Image 1 (cartoon, rainbow, N blue to C red):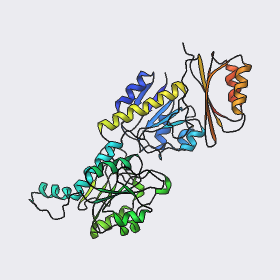
Image 2: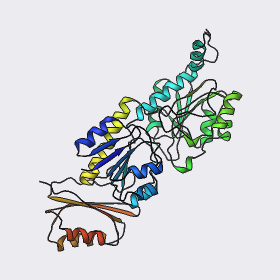
Image 3: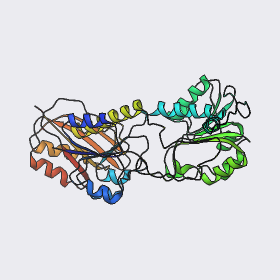
Length: 401
């Protein structure tokens, strides 16, 4: 029976789907460090993680038989994608499933900061009745600047505009503006015009330290600041200084450079205790609806890959989906070089089989071809395909009834 290891409290729907597909599933509540993960992967065919577990090149090398890794989240910077691709390990994530949850949290925090609800709440819990309009504002008519106009940033744009905000955005790529949103030509332009700035950038290495003292200085006095993207993007010491000076009137942070691995572990941050600052424990996508959809989506992708070689929406392998009902199938991941497909098909013919269906796709230096044949491939054919110098991984699927 194939085995699946799911870490970091992945939604039970993933366990159900993998179990129904014939997997023995082990589900672990927390993350594992590299040494513990390496040991835990013994006998594992499919690994599921979230943001805290690091699937490094050494971890992947320790389990050559690993077929796939599922990131049950949006981010994939915790996985060595190149090392996984070189070993034929498909990686899948959930790029859309928690979009709405993150956007709703951002909207809630923008309103909360504008109304200074955190300070009002703390005062009342301390027994102080502070009924005042001082420092409280509506968000209607104010300008929101969105840094990163992807799935989350663009949907935030739509909802913010529906609430009466003016929306500016900045992205490295040329993106279609939704509604009345206006694209800015530079980050500096956005910072100088917006009254609230919300970060929604991805986890690429180039975004490390994107937002620091210089960027805060360019923001308008008494602006609001949100980061629900990646912890390493923002200089928290600089944010603290700007909040204490009053230049930043309020901030909401959901992601941190270093985060506890286990529920209940101590959380340390220079942002603790600051006025009108909302700190949340990386829960932007942590709603029941989002986690259920992520579990269903990623587990489905893992099952489709292991059962049929389907790599649609894989983040590191060429996208291939072959629909057919032939007797047998094999998938060949190889170096993208001239003549590989011709030689593979010639070997199929030499072993007395006929190609019933075939799809090839390439991605950079990788080529991936899924082939349906009219009978079970003999062991000699599989040996010959694996012996081709360009072959990285060959997977033969069970004969269909």
